[in-house]
Amino acid sequence: MHTIRLRGPWQFTPLATTYWSDSAESQETGIEVPPPGTMKIPNDWSDTLGDSFHGKVLFQRYFHKPTGLEQGDLVQITLTEVNALATVFLNHEAIGTGDVSQGKSTFEVTDKLELRNLLEVIIDFPALDAKSAPLSTIEGRTGGITGEVQIEILPSSV
Image 1 (cartoon, helix red, strand yellow):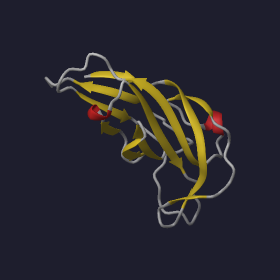
Image 2 (cartoon, one colour):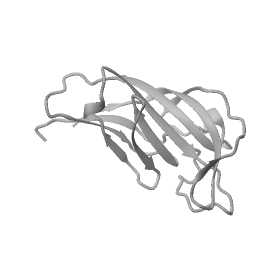
Image 3 (cartoon, one colour):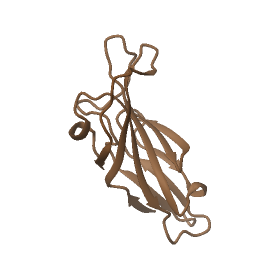
């Protein structure tokens, strides 16, 4: 297997502030969000958005189609850790979801790759209160793509 890590600067855009309801749903609060910017991944957003930000943030990163792919090779995108909920898109098409309780999330994208690709991850780290349903989060960390984002190429001979 060959692995390409998508570390470094990603564009981010806060979309909404959210809270986790008693029915285990993320609800938008309508509170104003901070401006967009760039953030190094992997990381939580404490340095950029602050420890008190709870909400949905869109992360975006372009990458080129890996070269040297052969017939039968499998290409997948893996998020090793997120805090707390993730929805993943490749070239504006939803490819899956993940959450902190799952650990690693892997999405097969071989037939979805273009020469230049846009990977988008919406992270939702909603506020919790006494009425909230249970939600797994990483204790002591804010929201974000807290693990590696990887493009994995599995040769057809494996």
